[in-house]
Length: 299
Image 1: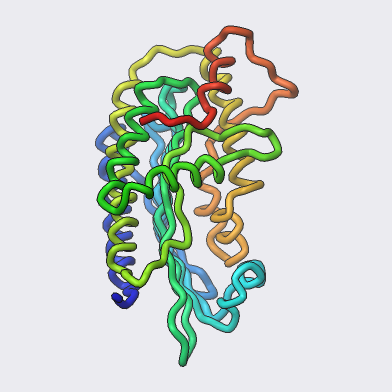
Image 2: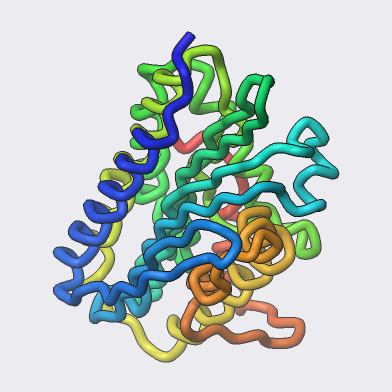
């Protein structure tokens, strides 16, 4: 059994934010603008935003918040956290590309620990990454999911199918009865007696994101597109907004715990649109998306 070490996790997360920004900047040619922020109740973070030629907007956030007590919404679901001080830290990333043929993507890795004198710490890791295409390409989906499977395999054959299903279930718009994207990995409450092994899996997830995503960006970023594709991309971004504001637990926790609103909502696309009772033309690439998003075994 290894003791949880929040300082080691924080050092990794700061380095991960740096590495992600460098890799995304290298693809786009633009640079991130950074803004540091402080949370009055304890902690803070640094938000980085890029607006470029390949990525209409990309955000990579690091946050580390702490306090003497959790919001009531958290302790209602986890009563063992009542009366404990807490630390929550993580890196979150959302990329909204210019080209409609390049999929939107999201990644997040995080660590939570709550403590009180005379009792053992309550801690866990969470995270994952998911892909949200407007236009589906099977070779992209296969690459994405094989990369996810490969990073899971050293930790157990059962992890990829379990965390893939969790991702499919989590990124589901219940009010629309449709998937947000083609999924990937999602895990939460990762806590075993071996802290180091849990930490290693969280690192594998964070480090594996660009291996999964950037080859797809390179493959699609030069494809020609026009007003039709742009209109559909903005329409699909509306679904992204709906999920984040209605269902996403991270958004809710961030807002309820007093996080910086501007940083929490950096996941929103710079532009989106809604159209009443939109129906794509039968047989069109836009109509094909619904079937493409249905969960399946891509590997």
